[in-house]
Length: 222
Image (cartoon, rainbow, N blue to C red; front, side, top):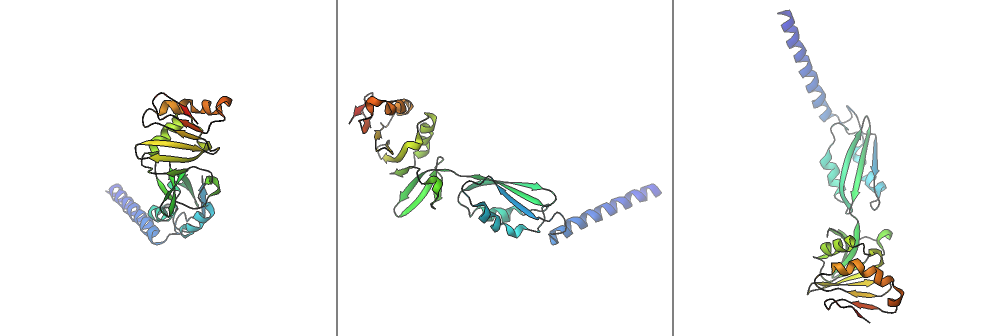
């Protein structure tokens, strides 16, 4: 009987103690593992100092009872952030690993200018030195993601492109920074992308400014 009473007494104290810890922690943020340091990592585009300042409100709140929704509400205001990963470094440090959206082109819609990622995600435009030379898209961009995928797959030198022009019939023109123009057909342009770099680099083709592939199995040079 004594052993049984002792057993229940221990359970009572365990439940009481545990309940006290959790309830008190919710009411008193500094009770256990208060955040003293916030580290933002993996930022290339986003201003990590600015983001860190926006998260200052987390200081002295509990690392154990982290309010992830409040962090998300702040992070969502930074256009270039695609996702974050939170790492708790006990006892006092919160590390935030940032994944960013990388623009591959700009688009002007009326008076508004914005960035586009290769997945077709639109990002509000702000002047960024790192993206001053990325190409501009003219015309509809709805098919841009699939087109860009083919460019990457063919190892096309995207850094040589000044602009992409999309035409409603379903084809693209590529304008290079050296002012040469590649006119692609509507269909089966993938095989052209694979070999176009070698043609552009060929000295005998250097005098031509227009490489017109719109006629099936023909290259018209101008």
